[in-house]
Length: 632
Image: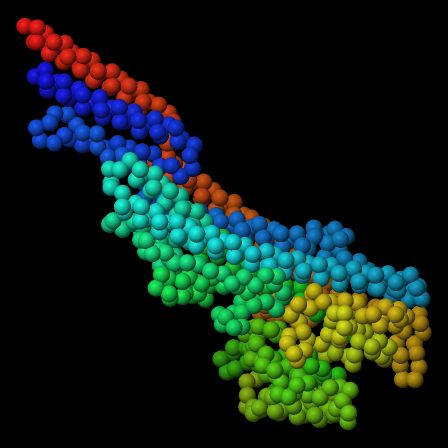
């Protein structure tokens, strides 16, 4: 009996000592990131042995809490980058109302036009108009350059994040191999599992993942969409073909030969390749946020600035042509004056089918034969049917005729519509009637009224005050040689011809005569064109909040751009704050179940010390009994 007591007490001391070691390890790692609380599971001793064996050291892991933690980590990384970048984007426009902000600089320009209209003889007022126009062009260009700088920064971040994700997958594969080779009762195994879980959590901040534990103790990693990135010890390698500094023309395409930005390719151990962006495999994490910002959010911001620059330029040089119902009683169409039609001066026809559904036909003139193909997203309406057609230049030799324009439109529209002149109307007026096609509901166009950037003294109030780049090309929205609109915000400049002849701001040349140099008609007309004339802005700008073109004045469009970006930044910050709370909750749940509670561990340590002392007393008593028996 004494021997049994001696054996039992000795076993108890060993187990208690091991438990004290585990608790001490927990206390020592109370602040260690990724450390999961250790537990000791004593086991009964073998047959013929008394007491208990030491057992196996394990981890107090709550798998459900860990899965939730990884999901919230992905979400927080996504919302964090979105909020940060949208805030930076909003900052590019300046604080609304400040004189240096986009709206403040625009207001200064319109005010200078009003001042010049009231005092057209003032050379100082003319200089102020030119200076304000230059400030506005510079401000728009600065914001657009900032947008592309953000995109280039995200391109670099994607390269770094992809490398990090690839390295983590390789690290996980090595840890899987070591864990499988380590027995379950090896005290080093929990440390390896901690390292693996920490790597998985780090990976979840980059990509949304699902980690599946296998029967041999290894884990497989899949993206949230189901693409396998790691199968036990076999890891895919991730690569990113960074393009460096991005321009407005550098856009994403599923076709690698057409894409102007980098993509992420996963190469499997067998050599297979998967384009993770083209397949939509990445849906959360910082990588998903960077891709969405680079390819969607920031290109839309660029489009808003391009539309603003185009609207500003065309308000100065174009005439808004709106279709009117024929006054002679003709039904089924509209009369519209297209005098001066230039390449890129899109004609928008709104038609309605028998079910009442409306859609837009956009006719886009070109000086090229054949005309270039034009994607609908590059026009005002991304859902429209785009019909390019060829015309000659307004200054062509021999002179271009109105009949040529009508014939080209007739050929472009095909059957179902008739195109003719307008009896008693302007020479360039066109009558478009439905003759079996969908019913015409509306017609509009923005028609350039000047023939070149040097045309600054015509009889109309329009003047090419803003031009395209250092080459001072007239902006018409042309697609010949590529979209003139794309990146125009970075190229818009004040026409040097106007700068060299400031009097053209108030002097209008008529037929053989010149209006007084003090005529305020032109600056007043330009002011009205900016603040009162309704223009069509593209659906791709997203200002209207729906997938449809926006009709507003240039002044209202400026406010719309600032309002949309400010609201988006505020919404992103609110979402990030909410996600931060969700992440904190998940961290708290995981820490409660699997983390170290110092108070609990200290309590356990005291209890174990008492148990150790009790076992020691039993051992002492058993020893005394044996000594007594031996002395008998």
